[in-house]
Length: 181
Image 1: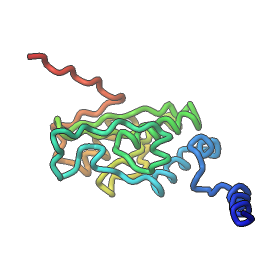
Image 2 (image 1 turned 45 degrees about the horizontal axis):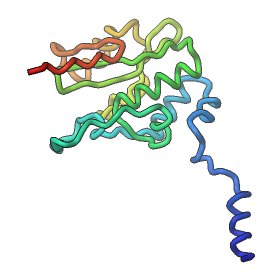
Image 3 (image 1 turned 135 degrees about the horizontal axis):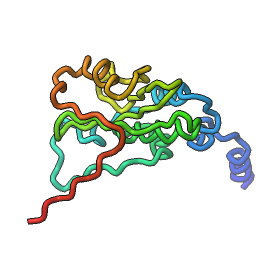
């Protein structure tokens, strides 16, 4: 019985490990976009299955994963491009509402959709892209004059094959209703 009591006291008295930090507590410590970029760069891992970008065929019964809340992304440290973009937008706007962070929707055809987070700093656009399978695209990029400047000067340099297909705008497009028979 003494061993059980000692073991219980041991677990009650040890400090909570730093990896058990909550999203809210972490955000309170952040002071700039650089803190968000550092966390995403060091902790977040892109999951191609969440974005439907896997080369393995999806079973007919499988549905796309639901979008994670920023707290879930912080806890699981993985997600798709929309999860990373939503995490960045929410966190940046909590740190400094003047960032006016918004979701950016990129589309290069029906099957290729990618989400990023754009924010303002000193009147210029910066783009956070941490949910990307292309390592050379991961990071915080900018400054840009506007979204077209980002697309032309940065994105299309890495994806010139998307030149005629690229749709780039702020916001998440509404789901198109399925056609009824």
